[in-house]
Image (cartoon, rainbow, N blue to C red):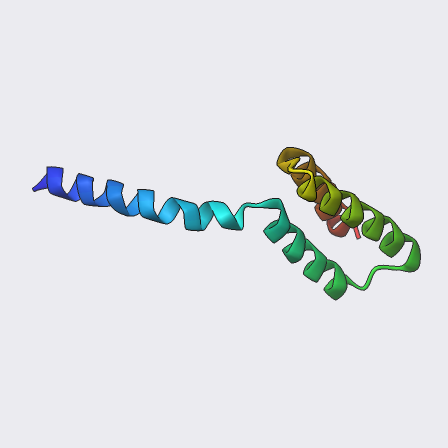
Length: 83
């Protein structure tokens, strides 16, 4: 009985993993941070800096540099948190 439950749980987790992993992509995270920035109503200087970082993150994502893109998005998130 326990063996069947564990096998079923393993199969479910394998099937669900790609769905959760896709949310962790830089592009998806960048969209969420961008929406948060729009709601935050940044001043002009902060908005300019944010937009520059956003462009950098988009370039990194297009180049396939997921780690670099996520690092840039993390900087963007910190900028919003310090507002």
